Image 1: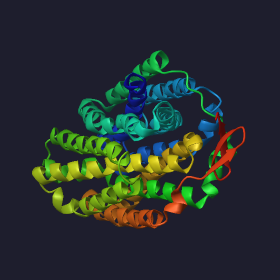
Image 2: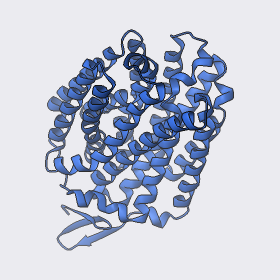
Image 3: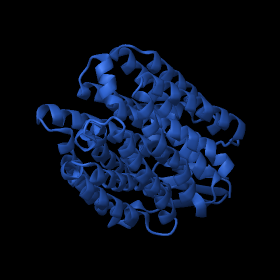
Amino acid sequence: MLRRLFPLALATFAVGTDGYVIAGLLPSIAADLGVSTPAAGQLVTVFALVLALSAPVMGALTSGLSRRSALLVALGVFVVGNAVTALATSYEVVMAARVVTAVGAGIITAAASSTAAAIAPPEHRGRALALVLGGLTSATALGLPLGTLIGRADWHLTLWAVAGIGLLAAVGIALGLPDVTLPAASLPDRVRPLAQGRVLALLAVTTLAFLATYTLYTYIGPTLRDATDGDESLPTLILLAWGVGTLAGNITAGRLVDRHDPARVLTAALALAALVLALTPLATRALAPTLLWAALWGASVGVVVVPQQHRLIALGPAAAPILLGLNSSALYLGVALGGGLGGLAQEWLDLTPAQLGPVAAGVTAVTLLCHLGTARHPAGVGPRDTRADHGRAETVEGVTSKTAP
């Protein structure tokens, strides 16, 4: 199974590196394109917003394809978008290229996750999802620091590297992934679960969690200035600590949700994130506490997605591709809103980047309260099955897929 899942993890690694690395390169991009750092931060916001909004549409358009074909199409768009970004010399062209890249990226994460869930035995589903999503978290541990390090010479080189990773992932998927076909779903099918309260509540938790994260993370470069005291090599070290923490959190989450209630796993992660973010202005004044702060914050972020996906799949396993796609959109909607909130807070409230930490902590506290509201009502997030005489239909109110008995 590992051989089949590895190309999927590499594809999500490419997406994760692409999404995360821009935040680490914001000062260089802003200076090169002649815009302010908050304006450069909107490259993150627009990328995430387009990804969130286009994912259901592109998912519907590609749902009739095998997962291998859908991933190859998506990776093709992704690679072209990054190549254009790497060639760009103006803010407008970079923004347009990020839009194209986001359209491809919107398919990759959901398609990779649903494929992993389909080919893994139920008792190992949490670990399979963690492995594939480990590509995203590995991007924070390896792709982001390395991309930032490369970008110190020329940020365009980082985007060429991301395009190369995407191309390598496409080769791996073409040669190593079985031809998995999942039930097709139209656009109305894909958005219909949003009318269901229990689905919407879980998606809201995902959005809020990443809104909180990206309120600060989008501006992580400027946040680290005091801790690094102008040393250009130290941000890479701190980002590596954040990434290693995220990877550790992701791996731990995969094991925990296979053994314990996913809702409790998420509760602990959100509580830790709120505490760590509240301490940002104090923790980022010197290198040693900043490294510890980054590792703990990263660990809390790395836990979030796996239990959320596990809970959504429990609503209706046959509808997993639709629910995971919606969760991916909810995640990137949070990224977009977080980047926007962080930029507005700096411009309108005259906050420093480090002062965004308590703002993010407040949003995380709201997220925790919303999550506890869903966790208190397990019936509202449990599975709902209907069985037919000649087969089995697993239903998430209005989204039904037939599977063989």
